[in-house]
Length: 83
Image (tube, rainbow, N blue to C red; front, side, top):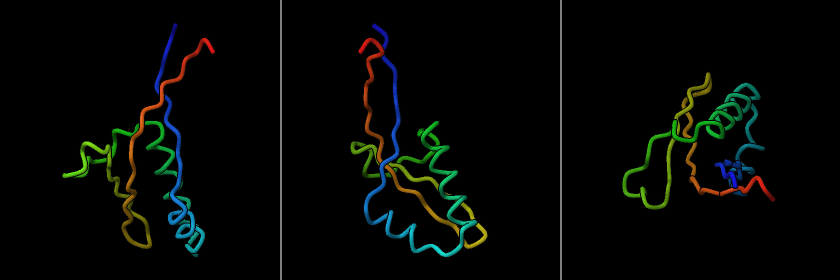
């Protein structure tokens, strides 16, 4: 039996709403690319002090429109390849 880690992106409804309101498409693309990079390597972000037991992390993204911070939580999901 072989098991591996799989990371999935899920957005809080408030995040979806905020992203839909962004008028600068270049900023939106940069944020989306950063989120995909985090999906591949979620350890890139900095652990938030005081929230270590919840798995909360922060990843800064510089854009022409200013700096944004992606806050995210790691939740491990084990996938069994035999299923």
